[in-house]
Image (tube, rainbow, N blue to C red; front, side):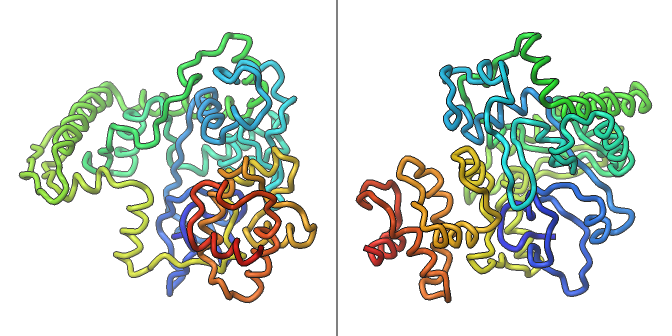
Length: 396
């Protein structure tokens, strides 16, 4: 199943009929895009024997990553820019990090992983409900992997799914890893406890499924750890081999002999290409292979990315579900558009604006209502493409 367009599948909403590419027979067997788990909807779309998989990350590590990814260290009024987490954890409730997207309450600092697993933010302080929901997830999911024990999780997944070792090989060099001042920060016991209370369901969920993973591992016997060690060494060998790949030049085939945990298989240039391919490229590759090109929604139906919506919320603006909502709101309220100091938001939205045909019915007027009220010279905005400049100039 593919979203209609790229990116998430209706996050944080339940997918609507116009949110995904429909197959002729309405049969679906794989979904690997970001979405919020909704049991009722997924069971209505996928076979009864479908395997449900997810991965969890240690909650404090997840908080640090969210702070950096969503630029909370810059958007919120912290004095300590090098380590805003210390300031945040003195009183998390003080900072406006939640808001309504569509009609759903979202917060990227509180129970964010539980939210993606389908647990509503409104029940953040209801631990009895949280524990019941975790038990339900344990029944629904074939396996919930733990990032801090990724190799153990993958070997367990291989065994549960009756896969081959080549099916779980992965690129060891992280694509999205970035350095920021507080990345390696370890919280004090007090800070850890504050965060545990703030994201109590996330911690309960992580602890439960971490323990569940290790119980499953114990049931596998001592041979499991031998396979993990074998897998680690093999995965590194494959990564070392694939790192020699150069564009346009094929590598000689590398033969991997049979072992107690794997049948023999070969590694070649094509395998290395697939090993290193990114999420967006694999999405396009599968679409082309199945004859399903990327379909684009009408501009007014394109969903607003999470980052801009979070910025709207932090700036005391309403959050929006679609780009059309953004423009219609501004036209109706006659409000000023985003200022040049918020050009990062503009950059995220401008590409979607440009996808609209200039003469699309109703869209040009909405665009003018937004773009025509900039109180600055256009040349002061960074990285504005010519097509957008032309539209902006038409409004002057």
